[in-house]
Image (tube, rainbow, N blue to C red):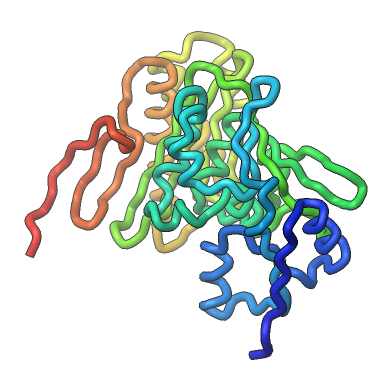
Length: 309
């Protein structure tokens, strides 16, 4: 294997110039938690890496005009622990806070998880439900792209070869947002089904992740919530329709039929929690021999723990 050329610009302007000049030849490296796996397993063999590690302009967490602005190099751990995010966007903090382990969250970045377009990642569904937009910067300027327009398919995005994802903007927080993660295997943390639900301007957004090549959102089904209160009956109806329309994939975490049943349950529970009907579970599934039911992040966890050997 030939040596990999390492490029490490010190400013956003320099990074943009290098990206425009080298294009697809230079593989962009953010946190590297996903890219490193692909390289180690031989799925990707880049000849040139464009590291954004030294670009300080991409590391900020700020609020501008009521919107939360997350730099592309902000880590999952920073989002999880930031006081402003925890206070005003708590569901977003929880979604980032239940990714893998603290070690991974200290490395993985906001921009990286979106640019990777991994179907079984946690943050994209929650960001999509909150109506977030990605900022793409290229030679001709910046453009904003909604999360459901950014991700085009398995590991595919609309980011051009001369563009960089520089920031994610999340609209002003409104009361009520939920993220639920169902794990079917104790051997890994990736979700079998992920459900994010939020209200924005009175409209409901429900996004289902980890079930298809990209997060799934059905505005016409969500519009049913405008016809009446978000009670138990409405939650069941929306959940039923989501499960019927969804075309789930089959992988090691579950078959298409299994996922469809889980979606019907998890969408209902997310909407019950959002509507105040009930439902307190954020994370469900077995973890290392433990049946976990309840909230993570310092709230409620209860279950049955098997005795160790």
